Image (cartoon, rainbow, N blue to C red; front, side, top):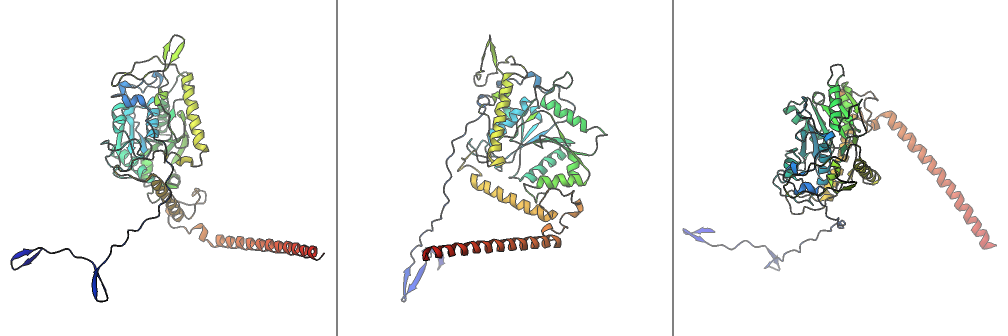
Length: 455
């Protein structure tokens, strides 16, 4: 619109023109370029929820009863026992590990699921579907299973998530906290007895914590259960070394932290509390963790789910160390062996859910996995630059906390360069010998062919 002599005058929109032979002509629109796409991945079958009874429940009273020998003590013990379980992707695995800890005696109110999916409040508001890798059933966790859910403000790396645990513990004045991997379900060892008394997984973990709280124990940093699939952490120790190095996002960040703890003479020791498994898949019905059956004469019948919203019948336990218990152990062991035999290894669980297109904060599953892998490689490079070496034996080679970022990289040292040069020269000489030998062989073969042709 233009102002002309006090009145508004309608103008036509600007157009693109080109000049050819002094004549003005309209430009034709250029054809839209067509990207070259990668081959589409094979479609995976849709997943199903692996706790049908909980899906129908409105509260914890509609779930099977926790085996009485594994029930958490009432009232709660005097010590605080918070347990963090970080979540990024794969709802079936998360639900499985939560159920495993609840049925192994951990008080549900002490379990904190940390939603690190990076979808802001989408899970809390129920905006995602089961096929979305970032899906988490907020109501199921809080209302039915009775655990707490904390949401990170954005997607955090492993190192950042660990610092989030420290921050939360610091804010809540927790001197100790536990954290567990979401792909590592636990089971109480029902064949274990300490003296004449049986202890659940939870009470054995509590005993370990109480042992480390003794004044004469020493400067504890952490206790590892099953090679840190579950860890007990002393908050002060990890704060004293400055927390996790977020410049090393994933792989090698644990090495960096543990070596720095050792440099300050903090102790990390192994411990046992029960059975811990490392899996990449979920049991189809998590009721197995309750291993309950109805006794009907000599015949055992499987428990049928109660009507929606009704209380589950408090069934007689099938007994500690029962066939149903050993069936659960066999199943978990099969799943663990399957993961170990999978070429994808620890990342086999990552791409189990392929859906979610069009939902809030959607990410392409394969692209996300590739991006994480690239970030892991970057972290390895940072570790090498920080400590001058790629191996996780910093203290063995005399490095101290003050040596970070000050050490000449191993591959740049004169003696290392000299050895590398000598190695290259040796390889060159050996290669020349091989080439000479091949030429002699070829010459001999050619001479024989010539003789045969002349003969």
